[in-house]
Length: 354
Ligand SMILES: C[S@@+](CC[C@H](N)C(=O)[O-])C[C@H]1O[C@@H](n2cnc3c(N)ncnc32)[C@H](O)[C@@H]1O
Image 1 (tube, helix red, strand yellow):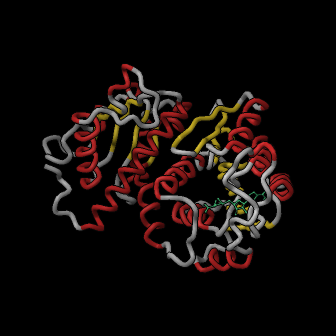
Image 2 (cartoon, rainbow, N blue to C red):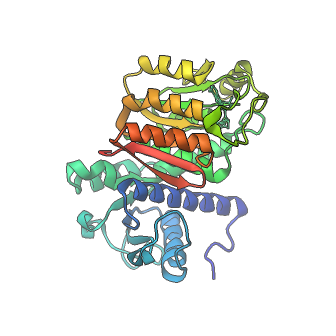
């Protein structure tokens, strides 16, 4: 019987959201590491999270066949993740596993630290000290740092001033990629901002994390331009996305007290993105969401030379002909970059050495 029975609905939703975020965050790291299966250890002493992890482990690993999800299937990928939970005192029903002293980092591809906001930084430092320095960035990540910020931001968003074309799964992917990319230096760009929802979400996450990075939002703020030949039979045509304006998005941003963190740039991204990139030393994360060849191609051309070695680019509407073509051409021009489909219609690009 499920351990979730009896939880208040709001708590259940937050737990479910946390587990989705966990799943997405681990999947993205697996793709980035080029592995179908990650041997994952979870370290923490937060009983709520550990109870969830245990239930998740039962569900995903012990009983269910792996869903035909995003990771390439192979015979050894019978389990998508291999978990070992290192937690509090052995013998506790919900913190049943092993002590931190027993953790052998070399046995794992990923070590997830998940604890209360008060304890997590010190615990992460302890875990990092156990990992050789050159492997630290890739091997260890702070899940509650991501999850708590995501839950807080989602709770604070208001219907009238947070408008986005992103569904909840895509939003989780965006948050995970931003978190991952923030291990690198630089600013954040959203090419194709529309009504500002994703720029607001990213700036609000950065604010909760205490990150002083800027989010640059780019759009015509008058609607999508005409499609061009490489877009083929696209569903995105001039006359769409017109229900926005620079003033409207500025007001939405201001309503969250984020005006000092979000800079909006009006015009064709072919013109605005290269100009802004000229003055940026480094770029950590780019969300490219213009839906068309011209916007995607010019954005990638301008940002790739300045992408930090641990940075990331996330591209929406990858199933659009023009977007796919722009990505393929950009990757062909930049052999140092790698890319993969990380969720339905979302493609990510990063540097090989990242
Ligand atoms: C799907 S919407 C973006 C949604 C937004 N990223 C979100 O998360 O809610 C696509 C946006 O890209 C903009 N766009 C597309 N091509 C562009 C171009 N070449 N220059 C400027 N804006 C462009 C459109 O005006 C439209 O607002």
